[in-house]
Length: 287
Image 1: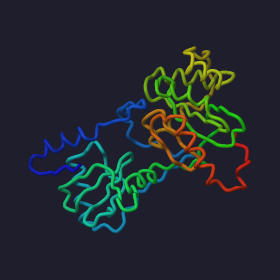
Image 2: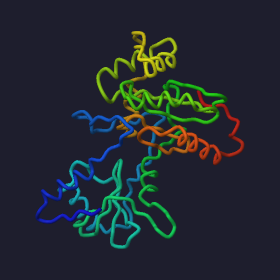
Image 3: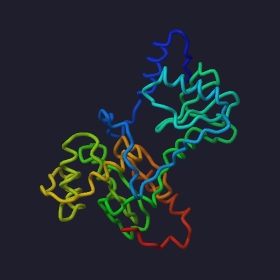
Image 4: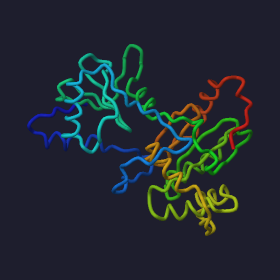
């Protein structure tokens, strides 16, 4: 779908805003708080592909496209990168959570997936995967609520909010998995109550028990105070731009926004495990 920017700019902006408001129906989200747009200081054990470099684009074209975004799509912020698209004369504009395409004049904007019908290659999804990929090995797993199923040789990270209904449904389903260690990072993004609940869970004698009892049965975790990593986890979520829960991260760095069905999770875990070097197949999961 394309949008043409002309003198009827207000209509174009309205149309584009409507097009960009479609959201996931398997995730909980909340707009960032005022003043929350700045990035926190980098944390040890957290990195994400920046994709910020702009290459092979005429400076005049780049400046024109950035100005087009600023004037017509200010809600998106500045593009993280601008580079040639698969189609000559078109350019790819990458943002934190989406990829758009524009012609060199900045008049036409394309929102959708760019697919090569001969090869079946989805250029848009590939780029999104690259932009949102997480360095799994650098995640601070020591701050997670850990649940081991079976041998636990496969690993999965889940970002969850204690008040997220989709997180609760996913938590119930995760018990059906086998041979996996699940690391849940509690990030309070929905409500101030999320902060209190997260703090109590992480300060409980056995955080996994407190977490599961709350998420599955609705039993509040015991009140307690401690030097929990909740603030660090909230900063981690901001740094990795985790804006919806649940967000899943697989060992190869692939992230999925929103809950997946258990068959999909099983398939993805198996796919990642098959690509793992044989020497690592029997390794115990990290603590």
